[in-house]
Length: 308
Image 1: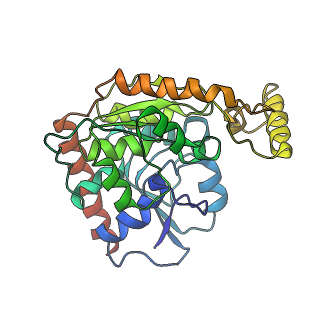
Image 2: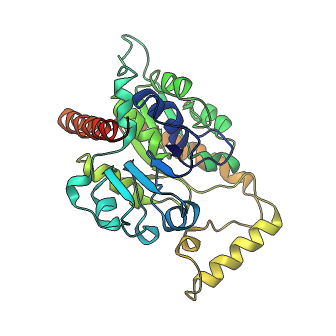
Image 3: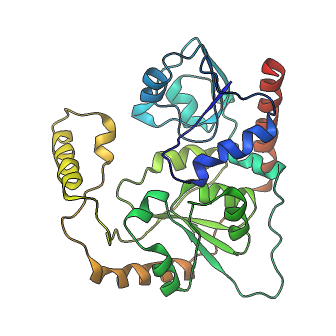
């Protein structure tokens, strides 16, 4: 069975978790064959992926994947749904709410121990940007100026979880930064920075975990801009979208400025300091953690019995 996930050529914890996690939990299941496909962690249930990229698949097995509202595909006969990320995904693809099992990242708890808070150490706050935000802002410098630990999602799973575990609080723009912190029982808080931030994905996960989300906004700053040709192309697509003649995803394209805003970096630093000082974070309940682990492990065992 082929392990299918988002791979853009760069490290990204939320995507790379698939190739780290599933072979450990489902040994001897995966190969490079293309006829049978497995979808795990991530917002993988999109019309483009299922209808175009995976059009030649004989079967598609789904365990904890998420969908994305208007881009969600319709349930097909050759899909085998073992579980999806949340109730919204279940509704969007047309399966019963009972198929919601939570995000597969919680299975990290089977392989990595929850963080034990160091005694007597000062409170350390970490910030996890979305991996694409690193293209526009020098987050390491911003975090250093704010007295916050910069934790890039562009690193391997073990080093990422080790850095999370050094912190008492995680501020995260990356959804899987928050999910992995929650799995390891490290208080976290959601941050909104990019104008193309996708709240629906967060709500799909958080509602299943019994969480009510309130996002802290950081001002959108572009220290580094894409090439002029890319900015012109994006602005053209946004303009076309206003008249309804475009794919739904064009409505979420960033509105790049034509010039950088270096002077605004101080405002971004001050906003990050304020975010770090005005929240104690949150965690899903132990009850929800236990239920999610049970549902996910039951789905893993069912998949094993069917394919291993």
